[in-house]
Length: 509
Image (tube, helix red, strand yellow):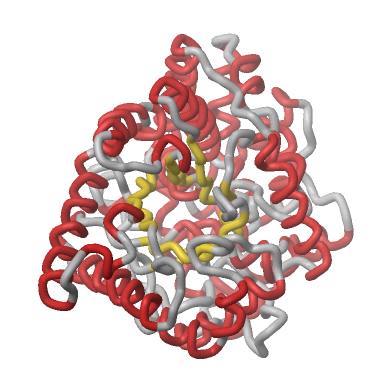
C-alpha cells in the first residue's frame, strides 16, 4: 500500500495554458473523469482530490471510472495503490445538501466495489474545509456514521457487507486561516484524542492534516501565511510524537510564490521551505503550464525527496514571536486590501474560468476584520494583481519589513522563511512600475505599494525588476491590460492579454 500519498492532483483552475490532452484550456465537469484517469496512468500521481465543496461535481465518478478503466483498477487498487479523496463541503451557513450527497456517494461506491470484486472501498477519506475546531471533524464523522447506519439497515444485514467502511473512513481537517494554523493543536489534540478511542489503525497509519497556504495569503498576506504554515507543521509533528503516531501533513499550494511556489522550476526551494510536508497538492498550473518532461521530473523528485525531509521544530517561545511578527504584516495587509478591492473586483471578471466552479463563500464573507469587502477566489485575486503588473507578494511586505527591521526581527523572519528573498525576487520580475505609477495617480491606495517596493529593495538588498526578455514582454502585456481596462472597449482582447501574461509566468493566478 502506498501511504501516505506524496503527490495529490487537484482541480484548482490556475492554469493559463491548454492541457496537453485537450484542445482548449477550459475543463468542463464531464471531462474531469478523463483527466483523473490520464493523470493516474501517465504521471506519477498518488492521489486525486475530488472537490464536492468548491465546484460542480460529477456524482457518477465511481461508476464511470470502473466502467472506463476496469482493468487498470484491477491492477492499481483505489484506496491502496492510488487514492481518490473527497473534499466535502463545510457546514458553515447550514449548507449541508452537498455533504449529504458526498456521504451517500462514498457508501454507494463501497457497495459498487464489493459487487465488482474489489478488495476495499474506493473512497475512505474526506477533507473538511474551513476547520476551526475539533467539533467540526468529530461532527462530520458522527454524521457519516448515522447515515451509514441507515444505509446498512435498509440495504445490508451486517457491517461486514460494507467492507468495515466505518473502521476505514477518515475525516481530515483542512485548516485555512492563520489564527487556527498558529494554534493548530487546539483543533488536533481533542480530535486526535477522540480518534484514538475508536480507530484501530491510527498508531500504524498515522493521521493527516491539511494545511492551506493559498487562502491564508489572500486573507492575511504572504509572510503571515508562510509563518503560520511553518508553525503548524511543527506543532502537528510534536503532537503526533506525544500521542504516539506519525503525522502526514498535506500542503495546499499553487505555483506562484503568493500561493506557495510549488512548481516544477522551484522544487528544491519549496521542499526545503516546507520540510515535513508529506503530500503536496499538484494544481493545474503545475501540470499544464510547464513542459511535460519538466512536470514528470519534478513529480519524481517530490516523490523521492518529500518523505525524507523532516520538520523544523519551533519552540513555544519562538512560535509566540512568529505570531507577533505575523500580526505586524496582517495589521497592514487587511486595510490595504480593503482599499485595493475595487480595482481587484474591476479586473476579476476578465480573468477566464478554467473549471465549472461554484461561487465562493470566502473567508472575506465572514467577520475577519475586513469590513464588508468581498473578493474573488484566491486564484482570480492573484491573477488580477499579476495582470496589472503588481505581484501581490509585494503588497504591504515592504511596510511590514520596515517595522520588523526596526524591531530587530529580520533574523527570526529569515530563519523561518528561508525562501523570502527568492520568492520576492521571483515576483519582482513581473513588476510593472509604470502601471503602478499610473494607478497611484488615480487611487492613493496604490501609493503604499511604491513604498513597499523601495523598502524591500533597500532592506533585503534585492532588485525587483524584469531580468529576461520574457519578463519584458510580460511587462508590456500588462501595460496593454491596464490601458484596455481603463478604455473599457474590448473585453475579449483584455481577456486574451490576461491569458498571454499568465502563460509567460506559467500560471494564471
